[in-house]
Length: 497
Ligand code: AHR
Image 1: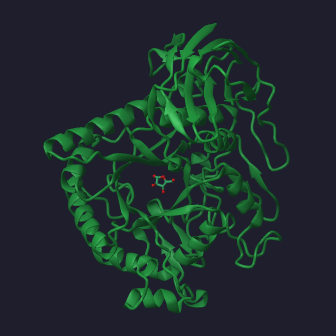
Image 2: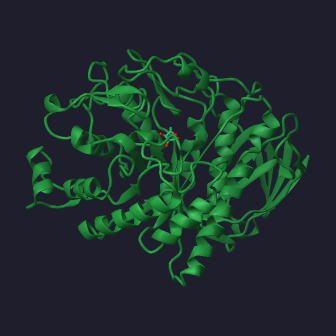
Image 3: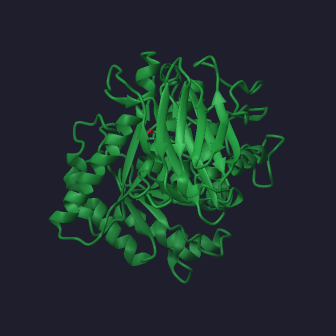
């Protein structure tokens, strides 16, 4: 099969905000306890954080990490997680029905985020709590000193404020499963008033309002319209969350699911622009896709986990090769919407639906999805270039006219580097892609990385890395044309300089 793409340095979508390579750590399962933190592990540092995990997170160059939830945040008393560890209460954690020891809280997480060179995207509890807890937490984390909450932080050993910039106003408040679930009007009102109070404490912050929990919500997209009608001038972003799975074992349909993500982004963008017009506003709302991933492998196992245990192995999806392909396609989708999607968080980062896994007394290792995430984070920084693509298409159970090729391109002006990201979704055919890159005529191929495998269900384990990229991809440059061999079901990164 053949396909063609035209890439020109003048066809700019927008600069890529590096925060689209963000991730997420929730107090859930073994993400915190047994994941980033395990004081008894041989790799533990002086604070009990696993150095091998820190090393892998740094390999991904994650710019921002959402914390502490997720569903967890809607029942969380942040005060439980600060001060002397010995005095912190153990609580019933209602979102995931576990016991939360509170050994790790806001200050420790800030320390860990510093160790991995990431900013923190904080979330406030708008489920069981509201304006008061949110403004107090912000005073605790961001105010320099001389007030009750900022001096309390100092007394806890944190002289300097953390200066967290990005704050989520609750989590998935449209979801009936959420503790303190609200109607769109109820949420819109509390989000607006919380935002107002928080901005009075610290005008430098930016705020994310909750959008829909997924495209299947009955209230989508009315939820966005109502929420933004209340909050438009008070917030900077609206959130999107989405997980996909292949429980029907229909790979062609599964690999097309980023088409749904693309529709989701377009619908939310239109809804934002409708409210912008309605309010005669000059401000453009941006999108924070702050939960996204594949999530389905662990759903059955999770039903068998007993409640009220400490850090049980919840949501431990064991990812395979086809999952890595869809993750790659979802990352491409973000790059194609670089003008509106300014933040995105792969949910999550360690053990819980994660690219990084840990063995309790053993090593930390990379799941298949680690690779497309790492490649885009490392090489997808610059300006997203609009690919003019003509590729053969297919129909699947839920989608029509799905291009077999997904393509995004990022031009890094500073390093004078052009990177193409490609997925071939064809289950049996190689695609010969001709890329017309005439405005990059002097550029040569530096590397063509490929993630491929004959078995869609191939996976990595602690012992063996079966799904790893190689750099023997075939791309040849003739004049302004690049001939790229895109193997069947493969993820490709072509770097030119
Ligand atoms: O990431 C796992 C969970 O998925 C989060 O806690 C919640 O926000 C979403 O439903």
